[in-house]
Amino acid sequence: MHDKLTRDDIRKMQEEIDHRKLVVRKQALEDLKEARAQGDLSENFEYYAAKRYKNQNESRIRYLENMIRTAVIIEEHSVEGVVGLHKRVEVRFPGEDETEVYKIVTSVRGNSLKGLITAESPLGAALKGHRAGETVHVDPGNGMGYDLEIVAVTDADGEEDDLRKF
Image 1 (cartoon, rainbow, N blue to C red):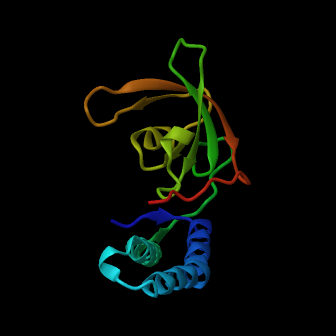
Image 2 (spheres, rainbow, N blue to C red):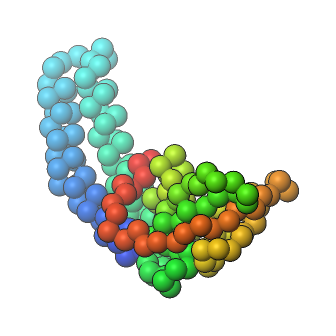
């Protein structure tokens, strides 16, 4: 599966790769070297912890490089007032007063607990391309869909959200 990423996503991922290669890798190797110098490796917890940390860092680097290599680049901006990437969307159930706010993001930034939903998610796909005042039907794929009214669509550019850590 190819992740749909923006050029900004790729730039941030490359920055993380560079940091991990130049800073974290150096520190992990130094920690491993110090732990190995303590002697008997069969009962050396520090050695195994340092080795695990080094391997996790290398794994993360490979993961990010693979994501960049297989990414499909998409455009970041959408039409004014229309739900798309980097838009903040306020929705509510028809007839209700309470609203919820979501930001539409790419797959690497998705975090539903923080209100960051991906454009590929059932909610994101249902909202995408619609305007304030419209009602959309969200189908999570289990036959138990629901309707939502779009209250407002605003730009969310300039707001920083962290890349999801795997």
